[in-house]
Image 1: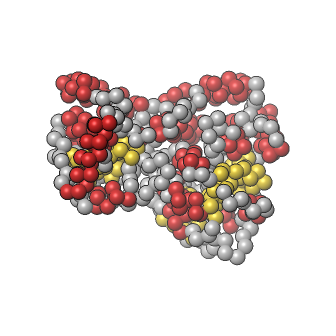
Image 2: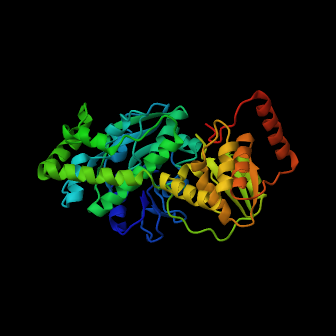
Length: 447
């Protein structure tokens, strides 16, 4: 259970309330550095990055069992949760089981009653996602071998890491399955301000997924709101597994005026429009100083890349995107910026500043850009970051796709691209020559 807040006692009580058998273990991943030790619970410090993904990965690294159950601190698990998950042994190809999430009874505030009436975290509804089935990590049982093969949750993001994990899981050949009998009760946000901040974060996460997964586009909140006008709850789906969720939602809806629900729908739709423009990066401590070298990569990291970065001195990596399937840990000492994390607002703001300060460089980039390469708007934040690394050498890390991006970024920042020596540069030159002879344009996104 990842934890970062003031309700440590409730989180501890929720964990201790789960019936266990010999060999089961309880782990609280402390994402704030404030939790005290508790008998029967292992407390793991996970304050290097304030994100659920980092906390879950830290907790999973401490666990040793064949299966890892992830729960959120605002969920109340039933005592028989583990037995419910294993009542029917999972098939060998099942990589994860999604336990159902139902609203906690007794919602008192307007925001909590609204969340209960909509039940946004229904796992049954998530698994029916039109792009690809997904699940919330608030109640998710994962096979350890699948978790390790994927490298865990993608860190460096503040939202949508559980959807990303589920999609990578299925892309790797594992099945994601619903286990409706394994239930937890979820307490929705208690104030309108918290609900609005949460919605902006969700939207930033969906925008990040759209940049990361070709063919996925976030459904506008307005469309969902119109669809809900005749439904009353996102949890109303076919099948008996949503009976409890529908009952709780209908009771909350009965206490909440229809007009109030629609007003909050409209308010959150506006918050989503804002969130879709924002970055999905979590808060992180500032870099200790300027980098000596900036390595420009496509997909990063690969094990070979990490070996090279360790030899590069005080390096920063400017990468297009994370790997599709296997997330390799980079270590806390390496600073990595991903262009897939840059939101629309950051891209447009960087483009305005870059165009105003260096119009000739921007015009030259528009002329030199080849088909298949990212546009100037996508590169603008990376170019601005590079200008702040005053005096840093710029090198390409990878093949032609990285080389093309490195040349453009160096030119936009007014730098010279440093040619690497040794076998790695020879390998890159060979790849570049083969691609130029074949006439294939590079794709910096690496898709």
